[in-house]
Length: 362
Ligand SMILES: Cc1cc2nc3c(=O)[nH]c(=O)nc-3n(C[C@H](O)[C@H](O)[C@H](O)COP(=O)(O)OP(=O)(O)OC[C@H]3O[C@@H](n4cnc5c(N)ncnc54)[C@H](O)[C@@H]3O)c2cc1C
Image (cartoon, rainbow, N blue to C red; front, top):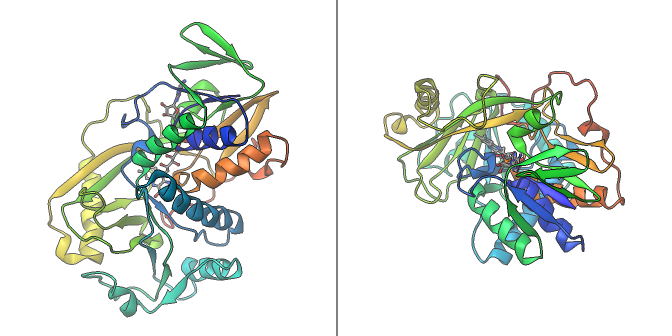
């Protein structure tokens, strides 16, 4: 079995396959800290609320428990279970619908009065909020570090890691002119998939991430679905993250050099700070990162066997990191023939639908 791409998806899959007894080769062309990899972002949110989708709520909750287990295995906190708050403008909106699903699945959550939610932060302007959904066991995964840890665990479990840029030739994987063959190949190549397999329903957009020099630690992460904004307190000294989930311009080249963020991205984050945490509106910028989404029209991932034994795994649509360990378990059962792949991940005609990310208005 060959897995190409050692981002958080490919590395998690390689680990789980090796643990289930498969012989696995993992191929990766970039260094672990290369900012072009989506999984090299400093942090990613882990939350179970997904509107009315039971499928993703269930997978995220399984993943939340997997992240806690990975903390134990790694002997360090790659996942910080500090909770996530969803700031809701309507009492019966997306947050309330999510809460209903979570409660039906026995996933811990509470709908709070906004004034009560404000007690979790040094400051929270809530006069425009009707309700706040609190997921107390959700949190933040240190994505880059998690990817390194999982890749290391995979190697400990017997996975062979090869450095190189791979190209597809049927069931062969060609690296520097040399072909390798396996019974199954999984191309987990993130934003590079559309170039490797033209015709996939994946669009690559530029996404800027902004952190601000504010030292709020231990506060719950937050999502403002209606404002398409999310963030968390200081994790690892990078400052408080406030980032827009609005889709950037399509056609972004994932190989492009990473420089400064766009002035408009900083402005959008500051506008949000001014509305929600006004005393932070003028604090200096901290860490910034330029990354990319690999978006499908409906936000559902692309997981499909495009020819006998050749799978593509991508189109994470900006909401894949949290699910990685649980998705790896699911895919292992598919690849070993114990389960069928859910048709939602196929190459059918997809309509434009929003809602699986944290962006209600884009
Ligand atoms: C700004 C931003 C914020 C996000 N926030 C969240 C969040 O809060 N919560 C969440 O769950 N998710 C979030 N995501 C999404 C999450 O980061 C991705 O779903 C996840 O990192 C995707 O992992 P991946 O392994 O598919 O992709 P990648 O990490 O990009 O990995 C793909 C790998 O394939 C390698 N590769 C490509 N082509 C080849 C080749 N030919 N040969 C060898 N190797 C190759 C690449 O070098 C790369 O390492 C966010 C994404 C962004 C950009």
